[in-house]
Length: 380
Image (cartoon, rainbow, N blue to C red; front, side, top):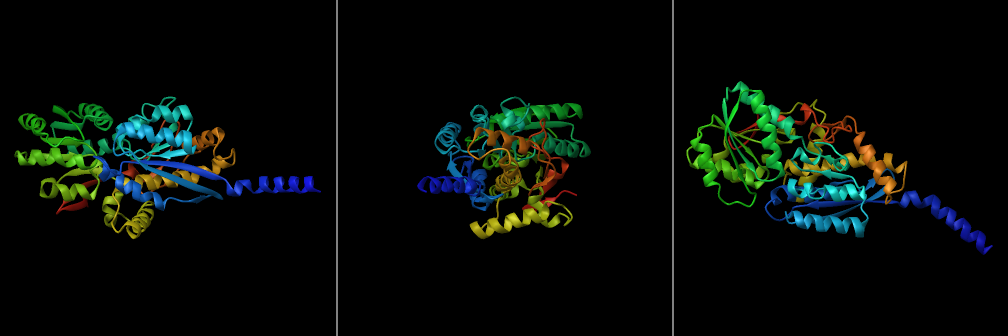
């Protein structure tokens, strides 16, 4: 009888196991350090992510890497070896993300990267096939900016970019697009996220007298080059990438960033977006939930983490049909499910992934925006 009871209990436990199975998701953000303006809204978004998906409990293990790529690697290795995570959301910075791709691939764990540079997913290879990007690829944003430059009859362009993977990829993309559209880049400068002065670089830009200047940076460092150029008397048009899409850019830049043109997600200008836009209601709901929890509205960077949660919410049940969480087979199935994402509405656009495209955004993921009277406005 005792053996029968043990056998019956074992069978019952096995039958109930899927209901109590747990998916572990690591989250690494830069909530301190030079990239904290990007990382804080990402960290604050984690409590809004779904904790129940398809009958499975989801645990989020959140860590701060202090904007340090070395610390990112340290935290990730702990998550892989000690926490046995099934996926990673993060890290915040492009250099940090580039530094952990090899470890994610070796472990066979999918990574949802809320970073700017397309270099985390392009060119696609055996390592990058484990990475999925929850921001618009640089070329989608760059094309919108260059199209505006052509209409505005910009013939010469100055470029100042971060000396890291974000700036490097933007330099490559904008050089290619500028050449194709007969725009000559007359000066190209670099600077570090931690720099407190770019006087030398801006003087070189100024001496080249470009019709316009593009700042290719993300977070707080977006303001410094533009403010310096304005202080030195530059009167031309300044463009920014989607890396400047945060309220702090307006607050820190003040009048010096008035008239800036950038391409970014609809979240910056939601009141001007048509109700028929599939992302509008979702974005409004996210903003309301974030504001209720944190007492302030999120930067679009937080939405990159929220969208990662949406992607996982769709993919996890599909992976669970093939294998149990915590296994190599589950993570491989999760990667496959993410890659098969089709027309998933997010807060910033619509995702359709493929083996060649692990970002999945199209033109629905961008709007052309201008700083007007100290606020964001659709460029019309």
